[in-house]
Length: 100
Image 1 (cartoon, one colour):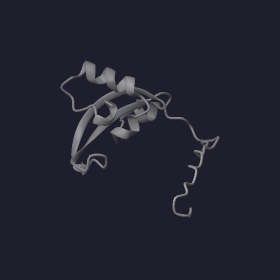
Image 2 (cartoon, rainbow, N blue to C red; image 1 turned 180 degrees about the vertical axis):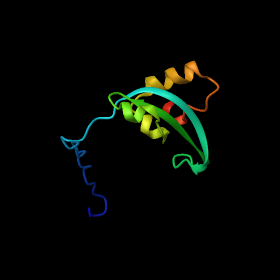
Image 3 (cartoon, one colour; image 1 turned 90 degrees about the horizontal axis):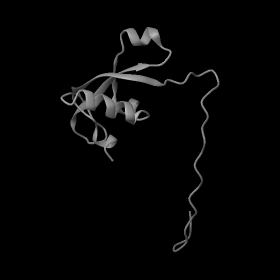
Image 4 (cartoon, rainbow, N blue to C red; image 1 turned 120 degrees about the vertical axis):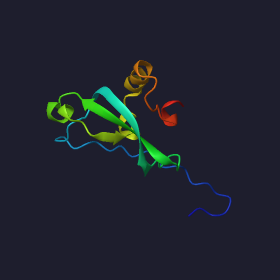
């Protein structure tokens, strides 16, 4: 702990590398969106969680019946999210965190 009036420098960020045997999940397409009223959005504190059905490159088995995933699983593909909502403007979303 620093003494009163002293500042401690912020430590540098820690780089964490994924294990070599772990595959990268790259979103290929956004298929659908919905608001899951049974879940709460931890970012806003409100009831109703925006979820997407995402298809991933190289995961054909998964892509045949993708499950609903929270919006934060799509933060790495903002352009795909924007394209989806441009094509389907009446679908729920995008989340406010994508708009900032």
